[in-house]
Image 1 (cartoon, helix red, strand yellow):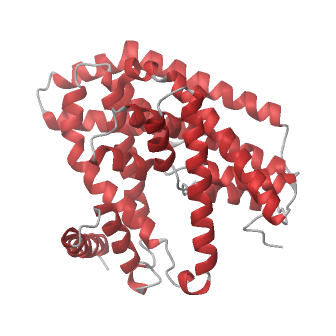
Image 2 (image 1 turned 120 degrees about the vertical axis):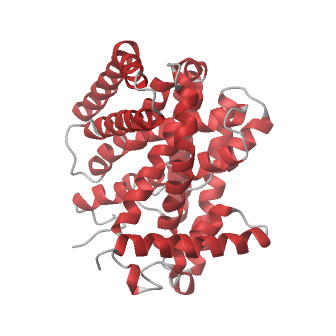
Length: 359
């Protein structure tokens, strides 16, 4: 079909509009409406949408734009103010989550120590897109608990790489962990150096040159080039696209064009973020609720309890108020789709305790 992309977009936004109107009438959040739209359009519901790979591309763009605009609202100056939240609070949340998960699963199922730690890895990560979108909708991104939540999510984005590196090692099929860790540190230092050079010598001059044309379209194109370029650079270094987009936002926030960038990107962010949540719904096989409802309820409650406790304890390590601690704990009490990457790496190790083990 020559215009299949246009047909797909038309179908997606048509169904999404109808579902969100119904959700608005029932006082249900828009995010739930997007997820329901994805379920209605999933390959499990309609074979027509079985090969909609472009939706995943749009979803990735949505995450990039979301983290870019968050970076625009923070800047390096504001990020320095929460550096302790990132380093101390973020590491505390990761350690507490792994320890609690491994300990509880070890008591309930008596697996090996390596398998218990791997389960801890799975429960450590939270969904940056869902949490940040919710905070921005409620204008809470700059509140005390909003800053702490963002700090933890940033640390988790950085931790995705070492967790993937250590997953095959746990299964006994990895390389030297010290070498892998040194490579990661080197990549982070290199990215930091590149960010400093871009901020001080390149980005400002580049944007000033683009603005000489006195065209908002040219400024938008130039900014898209910067965001995608920096995001792709971080991906080449083994880090996430979202982290690179956030760094791009921090860099542009140090210039005089941050407000113009926000006004240009907000409409695009809303459109592409809808693709992200719809794509999440399309991955859901609703038939599993009929066959494994008991396990779904169990692991949902388990995840919520463990991550809420770990997040709360991480905030208390920083000696903040209980109100802030509970807000952070309950906000990050879900699991990110990045766990699929960990299970993929574990599958490569051909471990018999991998959730995706194939003999």
